[in-house]
Image 1 (tube, rainbow, N blue to C red):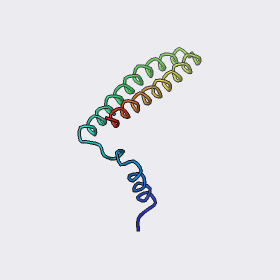
Image 2: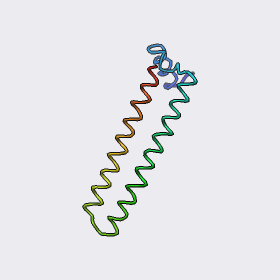
Image 3: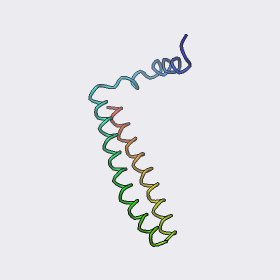
Image 4: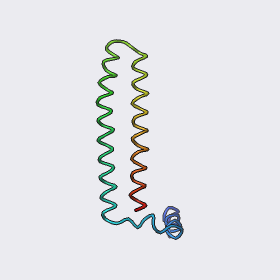
Length: 92
């Protein structure tokens, strides 16, 4: 007996077979994009965490909140950018 997940995947495959038909080069490119954007996120985190730590040392709560919000926005922006790049690869 098949699970609900397996049945759903079969239906999706019938509706749009191109979704799971990625070539090896596309898979490698997707993997490369993940690594690239993980590195970008890490770079931003390291830089902004340093700034946050300085602001905390100076007891500047307003600056801490602004930097934390900036960090959150950067993560979101990079995640969206990564997903757009991955979608372009999938459509090739």
